[in-house]
Image (cartoon, rainbow, N blue to C red; front, side):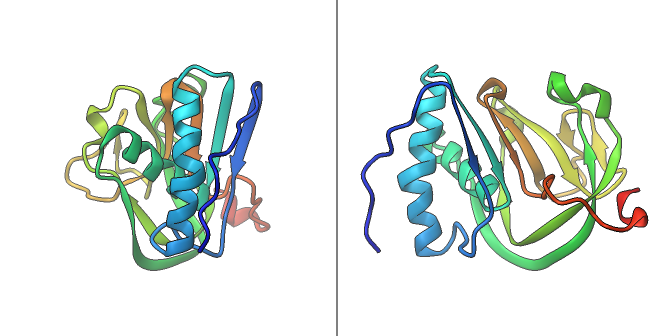
Length: 178
């Protein structure tokens, strides 16, 4: 495993981090988080005109990087394989998603890693956008009697958005899009 130099992020750019065959808990995924996602979060938070979208592995890597930058114990751990259609509920925590507050959707999920984010509710510029499972949400935070973490976030005052599920996949059957 060879470490890379710090990336040179271009102004007025959007960086999209997608899926990977690696996980953030393996050596290659962890190196990517250290070498790319941590500097990306730092660049966004310094006020540069940079935005980021993380999906699947990108969600895990950016959320872990955000935790590392802020000294928070966020990490991804191995879990049960989720592959297929799964329900999510939207929080409406970000202004662009207020119209979705409390609404559910069936989305495509492909993961075996679960990003744990203890104490995220106390981080002022970290908003949960969606949670796994229908009907289990209170506005802007996971219901206290459930320990399942959020599956989408708005970070850095909305300049970074992450999603564990795949908004880029259209489920082919109408019953999957309820």
